[in-house]
Image (cartoon, rainbow, N blue to C red; front, side, top):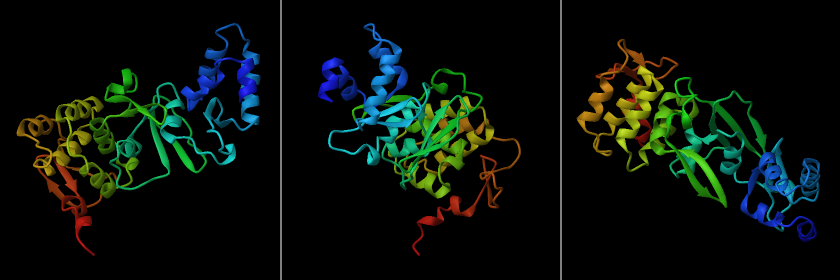
Length: 274
């Protein structure tokens, strides 16, 4: 890359500072001193052809480390997801993975966005955009609970553990099943309970509030959940009995959450040996 750097000072610094970047970021950096858009596009194309950059998808590039072949290079998926859209936020099970609390490993990277987007696969990793719930879609940072964390030489936007808990209980299909959700969340030693309640109310779903209340109630000792937290949630549960699972799996009615909870979840049967 040395010869190219001689012609375009700062190119090495740009790539070193951005393991993953967008076409817009590159153009903004390399047209600011008078270079044309065409020159910047040609430079990008040459870098891709030379194997110095990997084109993840249209408008998204990853810097290939020295000595690594572009065709087999796997860019950091959290950085890729963060750059897929301006509002992209790593979320759901992928947020658990980022925070080190996913029970199982998945080759699926989930991110929140306001738009409807199609999933795509790059180097074996599936990138899935999940449209934010209507109640928070137009709010700054989708209602909050979004962190910016340094990672792999760049920065990742990711939901907090509190926001992740609520999002998973709101959309459990994004969590890999109740056992995966429960085992993952149970590995977290501390939550800010006030933030959990705030996020639950923002989504505007009585069923979600009931699910959150049930989970906290079931783990009240481990998470130091007080009556004040449970009472705040219990006042907003569904007026009629509702199934924990959208598949309407049979179970036992649990008060005060008005939830019909499958025996497997109620008694955490996956913990039993054999």
